Length: 389
Image (cartoon, rainbow, N blue to C red):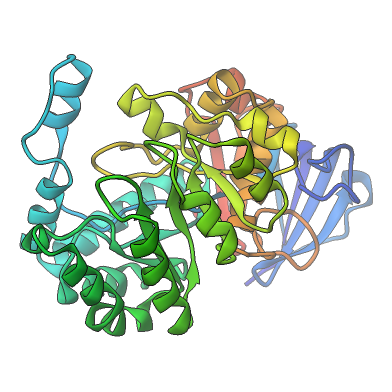
């Protein structure tokens, strides 16, 4: 792979304060050298070394590729009717997640693979170079295992979410379903997963069930993540911190004790504004978490029911407008924050030795991601040093 000098960068977000100003490590009139899929040099354009190829950024902004640490992309079917009813003020009881489960079970491997490929490509065109992908729409042993097997060909960040909801066949026997999730299903899925997740919420899995599921995953070598405190106050955040989860996701309803627990731990608070936008729910209070010292990530929660967006830029704009984040904080949360939530040090930053995941904006500053909501600003994307967009 030839080396590439990206020069003429008007504003460079490195996310490395040692390299530039502020938490974003901002550099102006900068250059980056990419070699062998990694960052080989970062600094002033006037001091840039030679490379095999040259790309002129023409004064535009360059930043790390987005790191989307929470997405549900292995599914089939459509829930337009549910969304339309909800936005029309009508109650909707025609299926919800069960609709997606039925469609996903009925889909072929090829159909699920093609759907996933489409969403990964869609996200890439919008600057997302790392993405996590969960199972959770099969809820049978073979369907959960194939979801993770398919996802693992697109990303190393695969999450076993057999505990999304209780499978319809076990509606009268939730304990039996927990036994399945922690036994035969886990055995089939663990080889394809890095993470284990559970939806800890009223109507899904309570604290004791969630603890059993996460603990079983840990015993099989998986690291926990938790859908926590989305719809109501509950034990999810405290459980995530207790078990050393990489992230507690949603974090919409938090007590002071929950905020303090997150701030005093390595568990990232991953906020998913697309879900609140699409359900007309109250947004999480990012300002409260940031002021307490918690690490905050932003992610899309892309799924067919409650947040059908793959746009991290959209999530940045909503977080700035509705959740009390500054543009700098939101961009950090969508890049370095997501990397923290995935316990990655090779992405979410522009530093020597990091993976060359970069996005160029059709704008002079990263602030335009919030300043120009809804405008497709991604002009170019490099993933592992290869120009993809």
